[in-house]
Length: 131
Image (cartoon, rainbow, N blue to C red):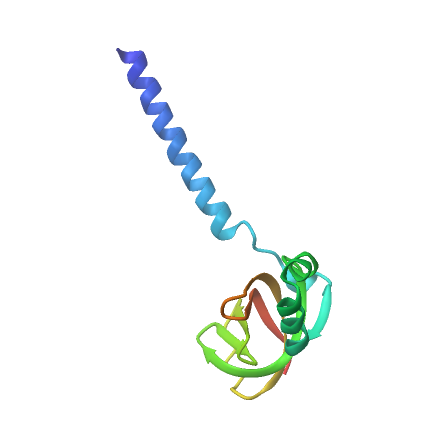
């Protein structure tokens, strides 16, 4: 009886540890220092959206998980989220109070996906490199 309780307790402990590790990996495992990485591509917001609209698979292969610099005009700012030309959603790593709506900027970030229903490209770990 005591051995079965130990086995159950150890199994439960292993599951909790696995759950915690998985959560940490999903929430923080993809964090990189994009400032120190070379920019894979520098594009305008309109050209990258046109690429994704014309061929999602090719564009995903080219841009997904890569650090890119996108130039465009800020159309909305909500906390840490900046929207460029109504189609590129950038989640800033740190809020930047110096930026304003209708300002031309270049933002560097990691491409995390394209929503073909909403026609929106999403980036994370973004920061302003030119304003």
